[in-house]
Amino acid sequence: MTHVQLSDVVDFRDYFELLPLVRNSLLAGAVLGLLGGLVGTFVIARDLPFAVHGIAELSFAGASGALLLGVSVTTGSIIGSLAAALVLGMLGVRARDRNSAIGVLMPFGLGLGVLFLSLYKGRAANKFGLLTGQIVAVDSTQLGALLVTAAVVLVALLVVWRPLLFASVDPDVAAARGVPVRALGPVFMLLLGLSVALAVQVVGALLVLSLLVTPAAAAMRVTASPLRVPLLSVAFAVISVVGGILVALGTSVPISPYVTTISFALYLACRALGAVRLRRGWGGRRTDPSALPAH
Image (spheres, rainbow, N blue to C red):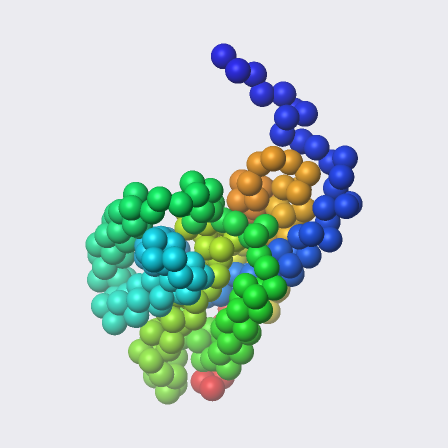
């Protein structure tokens, strides 16, 4: 049996010399943390973690198909995510219908992705990167495309933020006050699809929930404020991604396990703090849908 020693995995001797080489990755990680934290707030509020997983499977299929065809993996990932988001946005009006549609799409996307990878005869590392992320390989061209796409999502999200928050917290009251609840659903699914496609580049298709779900879930354990939840969610997501990259730089382990571990540790800490807060009766301002403006 082969024994793995700590020195085989951890090596920080050239850490500061390597740091400038991952500048693009750190910038990309910070932007994706910002995006994941904000979008994740609505994912939890609208009860869509399962949808994130379903879209990630189709994103994986799109990226695998692009790898097989020798075209941009990022473009393939975005096409797959948007296709899944459109299908879910059109079919899944009610939660039960939405979950059924996701349950049908997930195995189809995963099977399609595995088929494409089995036909691909290139480097095995490229296949592995689609599942666990490959942000260390971000070059200037990829960084530019990522920043532009992230900027589009962030601007669109900020434009619809208030009515979307209202519709997410209490859709019935929001609809009664004139908020276009039905139209906002597909709009958010498209923004979610783009966010999933970008997050897949960091942590891979299998672990995308750690970026788009866990930070927001952790934030909601310690506060119910509509202002503090997105701020904490963004902070947790950025700490997870950037921290994971910085730690992974001194080891031979891929980035995604560190990102998921840091994210999970933050969630456990917030859960413990939330339990103490509840036991001691520390008050927190609840979200009041009626206080939100319609537009």
